[in-house]
Length: 296
Image 1: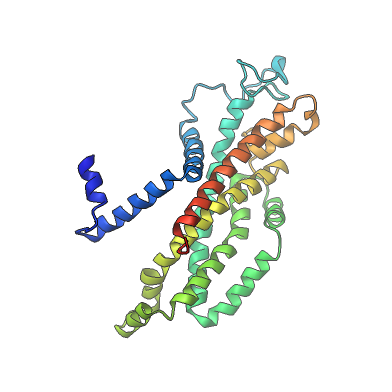
Image 2: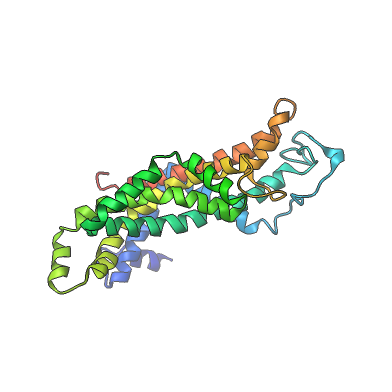
């Protein structure tokens, strides 16, 4: 372990791979020393671990109904209480993390590469700049939640519908960020040198511009994850996301509206899960932004 640490933090790396790994190790070490970043990373890893181990965790079946145990308050038998059908809210909160994380991961896997590539193309090809930016203006003219609701209602409820609805409203932000960086980089000396030696524009975009746009896109994706969680929960609250009987946090909050004063835990517990998960991504995103910001 000591030898590996000395190899990673060597001031004179022998290979490019060693230099890259050393930079990653230093960045991770910096994040872990920051209590805010460490807290956000812990929350995110905790939720990912819950999703990965949900099938083997010793909890009750989230779909099991026991009408004799309806609206039981939190206790040792039911840590988060039970809902109107006697289902254990704790197991349903754990189960509801799976579709939420799946939607977040799927949306980011779509909007980040699409938005970055479209933005680089707009910044590197002046003829494409105006039409692409005006298209971004059209999508950004509507609030994300309103546009996502319109798409979800049109296509019908389901996880795939939620992914499409949120992805359609999320890519313009990444396109604008990538476009601004591409405009600033297209006149750089290393880009002009690549032109001189005969590199094509596509190759310059992929090998020179794209790697420099990824850090800001990753930071934005981490911060955007909390917004995706809130939009997903909003769609679930309106019944336009994951169909029942699959547990979903927004739908669980909606189920407890009518009994909020008699059984506060039905809506409160999934609401705390939404807050907890979104807070983790916000804390981690703020730390990553400070890490990649050259002014800091």
